[in-house]
Amino acid sequence: MKTKTLKKNKVNVVTLGCSKNLFDSEVMMAQLKANKFEVEHEAKTDDSEIVIINTCGFIDNAKQESIDTILRYADAKKEGQVDKVYVTGCLSERYKSELEVEIPEVDAYFGTRDLPRLLKTLKADYKHELVGERLLTTPSHYAYFKIAEGCDRPCSFCAIPLMRGGHVSTPIEDLVLQAKSLAAKGVKELMLIAQDLTYYGLDLYKKRNLAELVDRLSDVEGIEWIRLHYAFPTGFPMDVLDVMNNKSNVCNYLDMPLQHGSTKMLKAMRRGTTREKTEALIQEIRNKVPDIALRTTLIAGYPGETEADFQEMYDWVEKTRFDRLGIFTYSHEENTHAYNFEDNVPDKLKRERADAIMELQSGISYELNQLKIGKEFKVLFDRIEGDYFIGRTEFDSPEVDNEVLVKKSEGYVRIGDFSKVIITSADHYDLYGKLV
Image 1 (cartoon, rainbow, N blue to C red):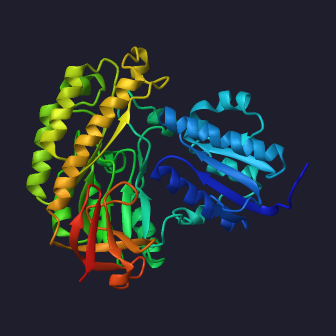
Image 2: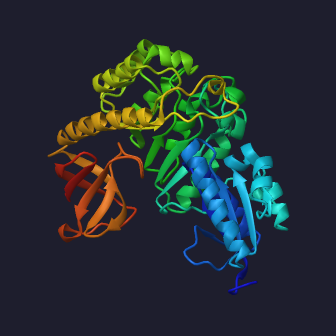
Image 3: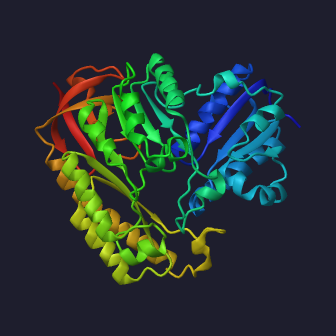
């Protein structure tokens, strides 16, 4: 029985997981809007007739969050608070048949490349002329910018190829057009994302072509920052660093998930590299771009990780002094190569190891931030919170990295604008400053 009046043709899109999922939701929302649907992202009011949940299936915690969200809206449907519930994205790509049995209240499940079929179910047309168009869910001055889909790497722990398929690059011409369209709407910062930036262009141009892409994007009028996320270390195209040096709007920033600091573990993970090669690559990158901010992601508790393996990773993090670092505890994923091994590091120990790395990194981050005191930085302001304008330097990506806080009482900046800021104090992950 219905308990409230629902807005006909109003869709609430709920996104879980990573920035690549957010990008997909934005594309879907543009298609829905073009089909005369009223669309909201994670609506504050419960008056939508239709809910579409874009799920994550990456690791245990993310899968559980997706399942909990599906169950919440399945219950809302039973209570008449929504009419239709649809599920799309990675979790339903990977577990569609199981989900259909376990949560039959959902009207339909779709995979990661099923947008035309989802639209058809809603009696909407997939509009080819809209390819590249999105309804941004981020603040209007920055956007995630997906340059490729899928992954061809054989990493033993990773289920992404099961959910996203093989690597497919988007042509440079299409991406330049998309960038121009975003710039015309006021976007100033593009964050390049893919499962693997390093592989970009191999399928289309028979060579790694990230450097040419970044060079072409840097010429788009209005784009003031370009930031590189999720580069694979093996086969990294060093020529992209020349573009970074030559183009002032390419941020001195690189997000390169390295996963471990032990050669034994890297071999077990099928990463195609060693600790020694990784160290040489980092040194080469830092030699070419001396003030680059390097962000990485690691895994604690992979099957067979001994105390000695963990200590090797810990010592390597201490020595390497990454500017930014995140760490996951290993998640035992079906149909991956690592699923054949016993998940033999207890969860408590995985968490203890991850916490130890983060505590180490917190100290490194504090020391590096102290070196910024007294220096001037160009800061892009993202939002206002309490008494502060909050922004970022070129060395920081939204939501995962350091922030710069400037007191509102010290002057005025417009959100989405750049300003010069002198850093006056710093703690582990925040910088405090004054407008110049």
